[in-house]
Length: 198
Ligand SMILES: [Zn+2]
Image 1 (cartoon, rainbow, N blue to C red):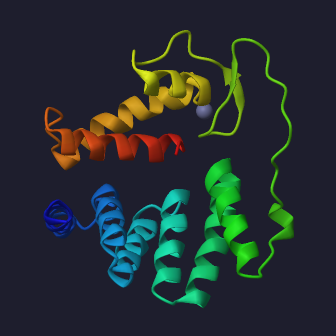
Image 2: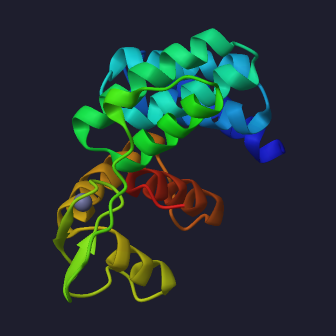
């Protein structure tokens, strides 16, 4: 818990220092959500979608925070906006998650109906969890341990390249010392979220 408090303070400091840093607000929102302060988390995620209205994952987490804070109508509006953004960007997982949440709230968006279809993959292909497309598989896992294999089996080479660029940004912006296991955990969380892996 002390760790979480320290992280919240660190992210809040970064967010205040740079009010246009979507990553700082995103990390702050996630830490606040984890701490149970859902109203403050909602405020942080609201700032993320103001800075970057195309970040579908931020709508998903904003709605989660709003629901936890008892802001049902706001959550529905967020989910509707977010599902549309995710649909336009082809972010399948956030889109399907948000459509599912809307359904649970008794709201349907039939024009964006879930498109989970059966796809037959051939050898050397992957149905990418991030972009939702069938693409060539990476020739080999990006790491030697189990996570590397999971990534090879679930993420296309293009999205992996995008993460490499984003990962560098994460390390620099959050000033993560990767020799520290806690920092490594934060980094991995960002990676799984970016790649849409659980
Ligand atoms: Zn992909």
